[in-house]
Amino acid sequence: MNNDPVIRAATPADVPALYRICLQTAHAGQDASALYSDPEYPGQRFAVPYARFAPDFAFVLDVGGEVKGYVVAAPDTRAFEAQLTASWWPALQEQYRHREPVAPLDANLLHSIRHPDAAAAELVGQWPAHLHINLLPEQQKGGWGRKMIEHQLAALRAAGVSGVHLGVSLQNEQVCAFYQRLGFRHLLRSHAIYMGQLL
Ligand SMILES: CC(C)(COP(=O)(O)OP(=O)(O)OC[C@H]1O[C@@H](n2cnc3c(N)ncnc32)[C@H](O)[C@@H]1OP(=O)(O)O)[C@@H](O)C(=O)NCCC(=O)NCCS
Image 1: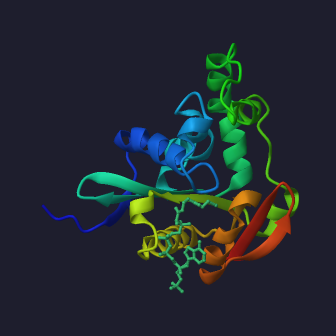
Image 2 (image 1 turned 120 degrees about the vertical axis):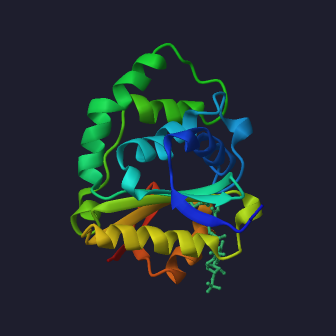
Protein backbone atom coordinates (compact mmCIF):
# COMPACT_ATOMS: atom_id res chain seq x y z
CA MET A 1 0.00 0.00 0.00
CA ASN A 2 1.22 3.49 -0.84
CA ASN A 3 1.59 5.46 2.40
CA ASP A 4 2.79 8.70 0.82
CA PRO A 5 0.69 11.52 2.28
CA VAL A 6 -1.67 13.20 -0.16
CA ILE A 7 -3.73 16.34 0.19
CA ARG A 8 -7.27 15.73 -1.05
CA ALA A 9 -10.70 17.30 -0.78
CA ALA A 10 -12.56 16.40 2.41
CA THR A 11 -15.69 14.28 2.02
CA PRO A 12 -18.62 13.70 4.41
CA ALA A 13 -16.92 10.43 5.41
CA ASP A 14 -14.06 12.49 6.90
CA VAL A 15 -16.27 14.19 9.49
CA PRO A 16 -15.35 11.79 12.35
CA ALA A 17 -11.66 12.43 11.60
CA LEU A 18 -12.25 16.19 11.67
CA TYR A 19 -13.80 15.92 15.13
CA ARG A 20 -10.95 13.71 16.35
CA ILE A 21 -8.08 15.82 14.96
CA CYS A 22 -9.67 19.03 16.16
CA LEU A 23 -9.97 17.61 19.70
CA GLN A 24 -6.40 16.29 19.67
CA THR A 25 -4.97 19.70 18.73
CA ALA A 26 -7.47 22.11 20.30
CA HIS A 27 -5.55 23.17 23.39
CA ALA A 28 -3.05 25.65 21.91
CA GLY A 29 -2.03 22.92 19.46
CA GLN A 30 -2.02 20.17 22.11
CA ASP A 31 -4.46 17.40 22.98
CA ALA A 32 -7.64 18.78 24.57
CA SER A 33 -9.32 15.42 25.27
CA ALA A 34 -9.25 15.94 29.04
CA LEU A 35 -10.58 19.49 28.75
CA TYR A 36 -13.90 18.85 26.98
CA SER A 37 -16.62 16.55 28.27
CA ASP A 38 -17.93 15.98 24.74
CA PRO A 39 -15.29 15.04 22.14
CA GLU A 40 -17.28 16.81 19.42
CA TYR A 41 -17.32 20.24 21.10
CA PRO A 42 -14.27 21.87 19.47
CA GLY A 43 -14.96 20.36 16.05
CA GLN A 44 -18.48 21.76 16.08
CA ARG A 45 -16.97 25.20 16.13
CA PHE A 46 -13.62 25.00 14.36
CA ALA A 47 -13.78 22.23 11.75
CA VAL A 48 -16.98 20.44 10.78
CA PRO A 49 -19.16 23.39 9.68
CA TYR A 50 -16.42 24.38 7.22
CA ALA A 51 -16.46 20.98 5.51
CA ARG A 52 -20.23 21.17 5.43
CA PHE A 53 -20.75 24.74 4.19
CA ALA A 54 -17.47 25.51 2.37
CA PRO A 55 -16.54 22.08 0.91
CA ASP A 56 -14.47 23.60 -1.90
CA PHE A 57 -12.04 24.86 0.75
CA ALA A 58 -11.87 21.79 3.02
CA PHE A 59 -8.83 19.58 2.50
CA VAL A 60 -7.41 16.67 4.45
CA LEU A 61 -4.00 15.06 4.66
CA ASP A 62 -4.56 11.40 3.85
CA VAL A 63 -1.81 8.95 4.81
CA GLY A 64 -2.58 5.49 3.47
CA GLY A 65 -6.32 6.00 3.97
CA GLU A 66 -5.99 7.59 7.42
CA VAL A 67 -6.70 11.26 7.84
CA LYS A 68 -3.90 12.97 9.80
CA GLY A 69 -4.71 16.63 9.35
CA TYR A 70 -6.94 19.20 7.74
CA VAL A 71 -7.05 22.74 6.50
CA VAL A 72 -10.44 24.42 6.18
CA ALA A 73 -11.45 27.91 5.13
CA ALA A 74 -14.42 30.16 4.63
CA PRO A 75 -13.82 32.26 1.50
CA ASP A 76 -16.22 34.97 2.67
CA THR A 77 -16.29 35.17 6.47
CA ARG A 78 -19.41 37.35 6.67
CA ALA A 79 -21.39 35.09 4.30
CA PHE A 80 -20.19 32.06 6.27
CA GLU A 81 -21.27 33.61 9.57
CA ALA A 82 -24.71 34.26 8.09
CA GLN A 83 -24.95 30.70 6.83
CA LEU A 84 -24.06 29.26 10.24
CA THR A 85 -26.57 31.58 11.91
CA ALA A 86 -29.24 30.21 9.60
CA SER A 87 -28.28 26.55 9.29
CA TRP A 88 -25.72 25.38 11.87
CA TRP A 89 -25.98 27.05 15.27
CA PRO A 90 -29.77 26.67 15.80
CA ALA A 91 -29.72 22.85 15.75
CA LEU A 92 -26.69 22.76 18.06
CA GLN A 93 -28.24 25.29 20.41
CA GLU A 94 -31.25 23.02 20.62
CA GLN A 95 -29.15 19.86 21.03
CA TYR A 96 -27.11 21.45 23.84
CA ARG A 97 -30.04 23.28 25.41
CA HIS A 98 -29.67 21.57 28.78
CA ARG A 99 -25.91 21.06 28.71
CA GLU A 100 -23.99 22.28 31.72
CA PRO A 101 -20.24 22.79 31.61
CA VAL A 102 -18.40 19.89 33.23
CA ALA A 103 -14.81 19.90 31.94
CA PRO A 104 -12.53 22.98 32.06
CA LEU A 105 -13.12 24.27 28.50
CA ASP A 106 -16.82 23.36 28.21
CA ALA A 107 -18.16 26.70 29.42
CA ASN A 108 -16.26 28.75 26.88
CA LEU A 109 -17.23 26.48 24.02
CA LEU A 110 -20.90 26.26 24.99
CA HIS A 111 -21.00 30.05 25.26
CA SER A 112 -19.52 30.39 21.77
CA ILE A 113 -22.22 28.11 20.38
CA ARG A 114 -25.04 29.87 22.23
CA HIS A 115 -23.70 33.33 21.37
CA PRO A 116 -21.60 33.00 18.20
CA ASP A 117 -19.29 35.95 17.71
CA ALA A 118 -18.52 37.72 14.44
CA ALA A 119 -15.07 38.47 13.06
CA ALA A 120 -13.87 42.05 13.57
CA ALA A 121 -14.82 44.48 10.81
CA GLU A 122 -11.20 45.55 10.36
CA LEU A 123 -10.29 41.94 9.53
CA VAL A 124 -12.99 41.07 7.01
CA GLY A 125 -12.53 44.29 5.02
CA GLN A 126 -9.14 43.49 3.49
CA TRP A 127 -8.90 39.85 4.51
CA PRO A 128 -12.42 38.49 3.89
CA ALA A 129 -11.54 34.78 4.10
CA HIS A 130 -10.31 32.92 7.18
CA LEU A 131 -8.82 29.49 7.75
CA HIS A 132 -7.94 26.82 10.34
CA ILE A 133 -5.18 24.21 10.04
CA ASN A 134 -4.52 21.27 12.37
CA LEU A 135 -2.19 18.32 11.92
CA LEU A 136 -1.77 15.41 14.31
CA PRO A 137 1.60 15.43 16.13
CA GLU A 138 3.05 12.56 14.08
CA GLN A 139 2.50 14.59 10.92
CA GLN A 140 3.95 17.87 12.17
CA LYS A 141 7.32 19.42 11.30
CA GLY A 142 7.62 17.52 8.03
CA GLY A 143 6.67 20.31 5.66
CA TRP A 144 3.01 19.25 5.35
CA GLY A 145 1.67 22.30 7.15
CA ARG A 146 3.37 24.47 4.55
CA LYS A 147 2.05 22.35 1.68
CA MET A 148 -1.49 22.40 3.07
CA ILE A 149 -1.52 26.16 3.57
CA GLU A 150 -0.17 26.65 0.04
CA HIS A 151 -2.87 24.32 -1.29
CA GLN A 152 -5.55 26.31 0.52
CA LEU A 153 -4.17 29.68 -0.60
CA ALA A 154 -4.15 28.46 -4.22
CA ALA A 155 -7.80 27.40 -3.90
CA LEU A 156 -8.78 30.76 -2.41
CA ARG A 157 -6.84 32.65 -5.09
CA ALA A 158 -8.44 30.59 -7.85
CA ALA A 159 -11.84 31.57 -6.43
CA GLY A 160 -10.89 35.26 -6.66
CA VAL A 161 -10.55 35.83 -2.90
CA SER A 162 -8.47 38.94 -2.16
CA GLY A 163 -7.17 38.19 1.33
CA VAL A 164 -7.27 35.71 4.20
CA HIS A 165 -6.88 36.00 7.97
CA LEU A 166 -6.61 33.57 10.87
CA GLY A 167 -6.62 33.65 14.65
CA VAL A 168 -3.97 32.20 16.96
CA SER A 169 -4.75 31.73 20.64
CA LEU A 170 -2.57 33.73 23.01
CA GLN A 171 -1.34 30.44 24.51
CA ASN A 172 -0.15 29.25 21.07
CA GLU A 173 1.84 32.36 20.13
CA GLN A 174 4.93 30.42 19.01
CA VAL A 175 2.97 29.12 16.01
CA CYS A 176 2.97 32.66 14.58
CA ALA A 177 6.51 31.95 13.31
CA PHE A 178 5.05 29.22 11.10
CA TYR A 179 2.50 31.58 9.58
CA GLN A 180 5.10 34.33 9.14
CA ARG A 181 7.25 31.97 7.08
CA LEU A 182 4.22 31.43 4.87
CA GLY A 183 3.67 35.13 4.19
CA PHE A 184 1.22 36.09 6.93
CA ARG A 185 1.79 39.25 8.96
CA HIS A 186 0.36 40.42 12.25
CA LEU A 187 -2.90 42.37 11.93
CA LEU A 188 -4.23 42.81 15.43
CA ARG A 189 -4.08 41.42 18.91
CA SER A 190 -7.06 41.21 21.25
CA HIS A 191 -8.41 38.04 22.90
CA ALA A 192 -6.36 36.25 20.17
CA ILE A 193 -3.59 37.12 17.73
CA TYR A 194 -4.83 37.80 14.20
CA MET A 195 -2.63 37.42 11.14
CA GLY A 196 -3.38 37.77 7.46
CA GLN A 197 -2.11 38.02 3.92
CA LEU A 198 -3.36 39.46 0.66
CA LEU A 199 -3.72 36.90 -2.13
C1 LIG B 1 1.10 24.62 13.08
C2 LIG B 1 1.20 23.49 12.07
C3 LIG B 1 0.04 23.56 11.09
C4 LIG B 1 2.51 23.63 11.30
O1 LIG B 1 2.63 22.57 10.37
P1 LIG B 1 3.99 21.74 10.27
O2 LIG B 1 3.79 20.68 9.24
O3 LIG B 1 4.37 21.31 11.64
O4 LIG B 1 4.99 22.85 9.74
P2 LIG B 1 6.02 22.72 8.51
O5 LIG B 1 6.89 21.55 8.77
O6 LIG B 1 5.28 22.76 7.23
O7 LIG B 1 6.85 24.06 8.70
C5 LIG B 1 6.86 25.11 7.75
C6 LIG B 1 7.84 26.17 8.22
O8 LIG B 1 7.36 26.75 9.46
C7 LIG B 1 8.33 26.53 10.48
N1 LIG B 1 7.60 26.17 11.72
C8 LIG B 1 6.67 25.22 11.89
N2 LIG B 1 6.21 25.21 13.15
C9 LIG B 1 6.90 26.17 13.79
C10 LIG B 1 6.89 26.65 15.11
N3 LIG B 1 6.08 26.14 16.06
N4 LIG B 1 7.72 27.67 15.43
C11 LIG B 1 8.55 28.19 14.51
N5 LIG B 1 8.59 27.79 13.24
C12 LIG B 1 7.78 26.79 12.88
C13 LIG B 1 9.18 25.38 10.03
O9 LIG B 1 10.46 25.44 10.60
C14 LIG B 1 9.20 25.58 8.53
O10 LIG B 1 10.14 26.58 8.17
P3 LIG B 1 10.97 26.47 6.79
O11 LIG B 1 9.99 26.04 5.73
O12 LIG B 1 11.50 27.82 6.60
O13 LIG B 1 11.98 25.40 7.04
C15 LIG B 1 1.19 22.12 12.79
O14 LIG B 1 2.35 21.99 13.58
C16 LIG B 1 -0.04 21.88 13.65
O15 LIG B 1 -1.08 21.50 13.14
N6 LIG B 1 0.07 22.10 14.99
C17 LIG B 1 -1.02 21.80 15.93
C18 LIG B 1 -2.28 22.60 15.69
C19 LIG B 1 -2.06 24.08 15.67
O16 LIG B 1 -1.38 24.66 16.48
N7 LIG B 1 -2.69 24.70 14.65
C20 LIG B 1 -2.62 26.13 14.47
C21 LIG B 1 -3.71 26.77 15.22
S1 LIG B 1 -3.70 28.54 14.93
